[in-house]
Image (cartoon, rainbow, N blue to C red; front, side):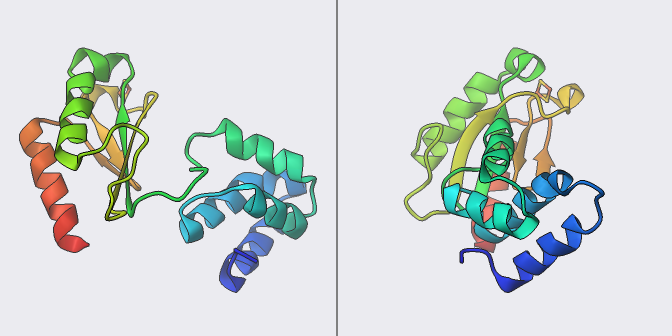
Amino acid sequence: MMLSEESVKAIKERAGRYPHRKSAILPALTIACRQLGYVDETVYREISKIIRIPMVEVAEAATFYTMFPKAPRGKYLIQVCHNISCALLGADSLIGYLEQKLGITKGETTPDDLFTLISVECLGSCATAPMMQINEDYYENLTRQKVDDILQDLRSKA
Ligand code: FES
């Protein structure tokens, strides 16, 4: 079992809230991601057993949503929006700057497992472009100086 007792208990509790077990798929994937940092076929299988639905339905939901990483990632998942508003205000340049600062390219994790960098579609904060999400926090109106400060702050907390 990859899922902890606590996660299994939380998934069962969530599943009990819905009239249809299928409705518990997204909360279950969210709980699994919070514990493990990612989900894969082993986790899909465990969730399918816990909420008693076919594994393929869990896999379909997990692979549809980019918010569920499919492999281990760094402690901090940096998701830079590359959609239109952010692109117009320098998202590509920002991604290049992050790649340079972190010494990785998009899709990679730093050797110390601290940062994973990806680019994503619109995160719904277009008025504060360019922006990125790191784990569950938004960082907006980004400049290179702000990126430097954010990375330094996160490194100091590691
Ligand atoms: S385009 Fe970047 S948040 Fe919407």
